[in-house]
Amino acid sequence: MTDDRTLETILIVDDERGPRESLRMILASNHRVLQASSGAEALKCIRGEHVDLITLDLNMPGMHGQELMRTVRSEFPDIEIVIITGCGSIESAAEGIRAGICDYIQKPFDVVQVSAAVSRALSRKRAQDRLTSFLEELGGVVGHDRGAQAILEDVQRSERLRERVGLVFSDSSERGATAAQEIDEPRTMEFLEVLAETIEVKDRFMRGHARRVSFYAGLLAERLSLEADELEEVRVAAFLHDLGKVGVPTDLLLRAGALDSKERALVEQHPAIGARLVKPLAIPNAIASAIQHHHEWWDGTGYPDELKGEEIPRTSRIISVVDAFDAMSSDRPYRRALARSTAIDEIRRFAGTQFDPHFAKEFLVLLESGACDIDPEIVADAVSAAHPAIQSADSATPIGAQR
Image (cartoon, rainbow, N blue to C red; front, side):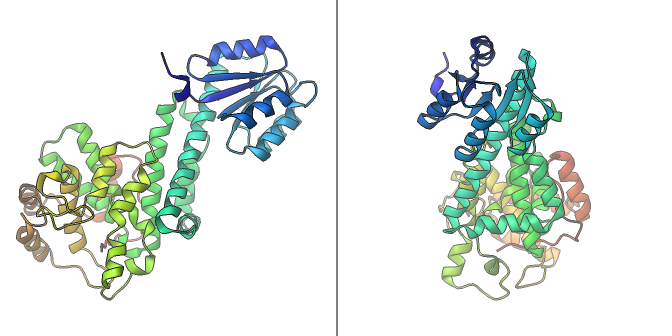
């Protein structure tokens, strides 16, 4: 039997017992259901315990449904509202939309209507809760609210990112999904990808880096004969590996000169920051772990946790070598791209110290075979085809960089 404490809570507000009981029978199998027969009783309930969603009748004695809706919106903006009424009108529907309700259903209702509306509302709430958690976590990481605001400003400056954020967090009922998992997991990943792209928007040296690293990591994972599920985790983790740089001051990332020890320590926090940022969101733990450890060294001298050898997650070891190759092969704020032959020599030289020697050897085979000799725009298209939610942020020529 499911523990009610793990279920989302729905409060049914209707002065008629019949509709209340019908809704309870529809919803009780998958949710914790509470009931109130008046607006006053409903307010007492939500002021006393956590409620995720209210189904609300408009035509009730005493406190009218529209008054209750306005009060809930004012005092409890995080609670979703679905209006289910037998006395609806164009005016009341319009007011509900202005108040931000999730759905408006006319009585008599049916099981499909109610189930779909509740699923949409709770999915929207979960997405918004995750966004809130992310921004709160980001503020905690950087120590003030400026980091969260900077992300929102980056999104505002990019028309493409604004469109993507709108798609991720809109009420996309056209997807036709009724199970929360069918909506939430893709939206979560799309949101993370939007955040990763904000780094590219604010730093021209990062454009294309995430997509190229994801592409190269996928090639290496295929050569290592990883299973399909792990192969997908490698591609996604590689795309998100530098997500934590949203919590690093931009001037340090763009500094042309050398960093001092304190500045270097700040930059070296980005793997741990990235792992912390994704923890409130619904992605596999293996991806968070891969992000955390992609700068560990095979000999144990890397960061942030000085893991050694096979203590380092396999996905992190894959990302490490391909990330270094792309960084060496691309312009940075403090130097031009190295010659391809020089980058290859460096990977060979640091195999067994910085890189997993076997993974470095296999990646060198790929490089020398010409498998990685692809135009950057084709790389972006290939990554998008392998993982459709990963797309180019802008049409500018990609040039990567890493500190």
